[in-house]
Image (cartoon, rainbow, N blue to C red; front, side, top):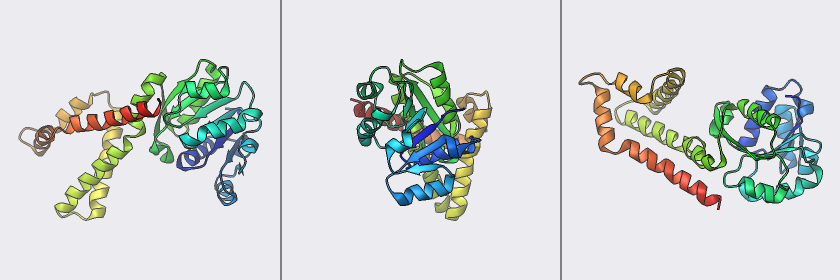
Length: 268
């Protein structure tokens, strides 16, 4: 992708995006810039990734074809207002903030500015994010393809409509917390039964990773895979029965729904 890209904000997600861009770019030093708050952080990122980093958002964004806003939601209005004077009507603006709608963006940027909302997750830091993408009506096919290319550099992408982005946040954006809680609970059970903490965490983590990989590569429904593991009179079916008794699936669904409801509340 022959575009100049600026990443404004270098928290964990901003740095993950930079890492993905740099690793997929043949000319990262000239095509990617970033901005951050302090001179020390700018120096650290410049040394780590080999790109130009500024503490001035306008300098970082100047002449960019694509600007990725990787800042907290409460800073978005301030940052957008700051960069408006130096962007063209063709500059693609991408926000990764939850709760900041296309309508809010267009109110600040004007209705003709290409704007995309993207919702990656924590796994972007290891190149395994799942990112939901929503475009406004001013985006061209090229804009959409560019956004897909950027976020494919840190994992995989899925195009959705804005009303479905709340569900994306619940199912993939915020749900890593539930997976970590699951792994911790599994590891605690192992420790309670004699395994060391290190052994138990290794077993639980690899199990979750392996199952996800297997499911991804299989054409089989997860319910069928669950059934395949359950031998008659065995340990797995006993675990299933206990999990169902404790409303295991309903608990997960309720937790995800709580995240979806909160996302909708933040967007009001």
